[in-house]
Length: 156
Ligand code: ASC
Image (tube, rainbow, N blue to C red):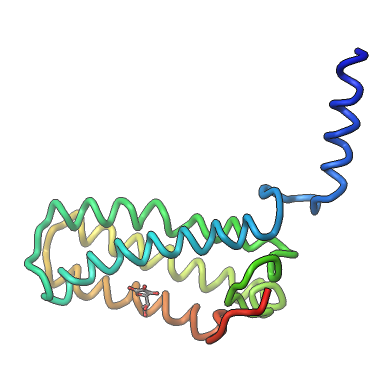
């Protein structure tokens, strides 16, 4: 018990510095997490796009590998837009992410739906269907960027 008490006091102290629902230690961690997820996703979405747009030859296996990564990553950033994570590190999230939470959720749902269709198309292995679904998914990315992403990074 003697050894447990300081540990309890320490964890209680730490808990006080965090918002109630925090999964991240600090806002900076959430910001870096979502930026990292977007960065890796963009890389693999881009590789898929290179095939969809004919810049590189279509390779069904490679398309599936890239899609698996994009499919896993695209939900991750949304766990990291907790209230209070507008500041903490330079970022481009506009205040509307939190002020218009229902609209942001709708944009996320739109992305989820288009991603599911893209995943089906990639599994189907037909380049025409992949092209169409890729375009629609890119449109969902862009729609959210237009409404919720600032042109410039915040200072902090
Ligand atoms: C990408 C990428 C995005 C989206 C967006 C679609 O490849 O990095 O953010 O597609 O540009 O409009």
